[in-house]
Image (cartoon, rainbow, N blue to C red; front, side, top):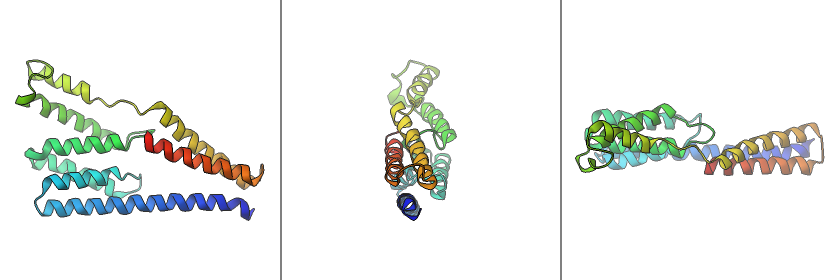
Length: 197
């Protein structure tokens, strides 16, 4: 039984290390954005806050804080509003998988970007002559596409494989090597699916 728990312990240790890396990197990027904002470098602050939002983990507080800072900037700094909304959009799209974290923020960002782009005098030729037609044009182009189906399937099968492998190990329903192999392959599929989704 103890031998059967070794792959599970290794898997949990690897996942824990990955989670710690995400949280530390996200908090570091958030702090760098705050420092840049305090120094008056708004462009760098936006870049760092977007990086913090991309270090996504459901339980990580730095993600919500990064989105909050970017969105607050759109209301207080009209000159940087477009860049901040694009950073919100980019972070939301980069972290989607089976679901889209911050889907509401993504929808708000798409609408704001379309509105700003439709009023841009240099982009007036895109989409038509009137502002409403240009806004529709930009809205259609900003609509997110779905995650690649293969990546989502790999992600889901990875989770299922991990759970089946752990179940086999705990129930001794087969040779230890089979359960361990299924567990490890499940984790690999899960991570690859999450990375490319």
